[in-house]
Length: 383
Image (tube, rainbow, N blue to C red):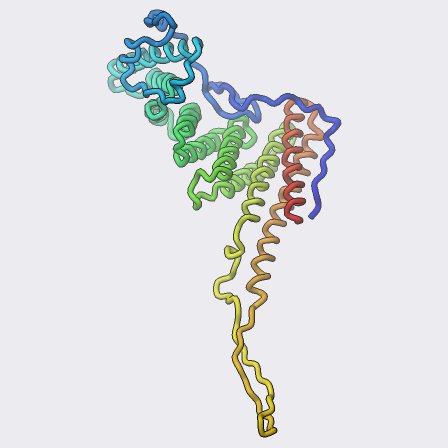
């Protein structure tokens, strides 16, 4: 099996960009960044009136106001919060109460118009505040109410629901609710695919996030064994590449290269997954380990006469052992071939990209990492 060698020494590798970034309802997301909403609609100053003790810690009065504030664990108690962290929590506690009051007021005023944008935004802000307090069950409930409001007022496929889906995904991850996190990762890509054309930054970001999540879920065995996490993500990448290939290449070099690298990374994990499978998964039903046959031979008796004797013996069937191994090797080889082609295609696109050198260099660095993984796999397994 040939090894992939890519020379990118002439390229300058830029510093690693952050994994999370800001998304607003009407803002286009930069390529390669994940879909995240972290903005607040306005600043709250009511925290200035929160009583504190001499050490600046949250007083008993504030703690009693927060009936659903969780009790700190032993590890949390052993590590006192910094003044900045205490201030952040105090602000969040006050903000939570203010958002609850605002929601009650908006619901009273709404009447028949119970799904107006102001109410949806208030639930969104409440959820973000609850996330700061690490009350993720309550945050999930708030985000879900914001989501339902947007769906009713703007439609089931509205892109306005993407920030809510993102935060539902984040809170379920924080709560280790892996199946729900998987659901929202899929929903984000579904909505982005319905709302934006192939190659759009938002659609690409949603697909990338889903792909990264599938890798994490597979590596850490977070989903059920029947989820086909890697396979479904690869299929999504392949469909996206196929769509983008039918569009003009101009302006899509980086997007298509990103898709090729995402596909290659997923297929690297699939290659290891295939290698780890037992050969029993490749055995054909009905094929037996051995078969019986009759063997006859002549023997000389004590009186000097010769007679023929026959016996039934068990003979191993070599196909039982060789065919599954051959099938497994062919599947791995085909997967490695796809990885090589994806890397070569990505490299060719990046070589002609001159307009965004920083992003190009980041993708070249990612390609080198995948190439190293490929070469290590081929070497370690003598492929």
